[in-house]
Image 1: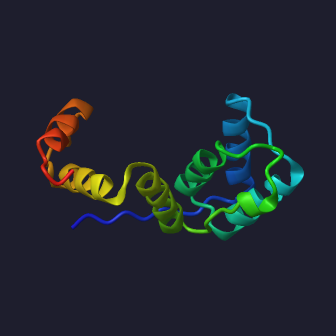
Image 2: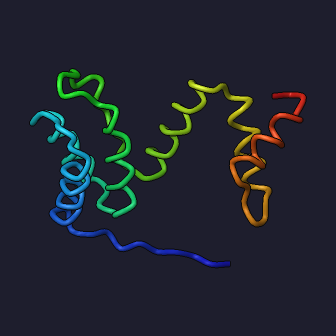
Amino acid sequence: MITFSWTPAPIVICFLFFLAFVSFHFFLFNFLQEGVVKIALAACSLPLFTKLVFEDIKRWKSYHPLELTHLQHTVGGTINKLFDKIEKEHGRLLVSHALSYIAAARAGLSEGELEDILSIDDEV
């Protein structure tokens, strides 16, 4: 069994990576949202988490109130939040079947192959 271990990066480095993502994509956020991001990065300073946080906040608008700018503080929590969002958009059945097919494929699936498999799945 292969195990991976990631070493947390210093919070300053994670925030600099985050600012690089933001500036590259010309994304603006307000100082309250910046505080939410800093708190999340202080809780988990893994580089993967930094990227997931950026992907999560790309949907934020600078005028969104703080109630709409909630971030998870773990990699697992952020991924679960992403899956919940996808399930709301596309339905639990479709998402669960698609992820099952992807997990079962030894060499992965192309988008076309996944569409073909899902199209012949009578439950979906």
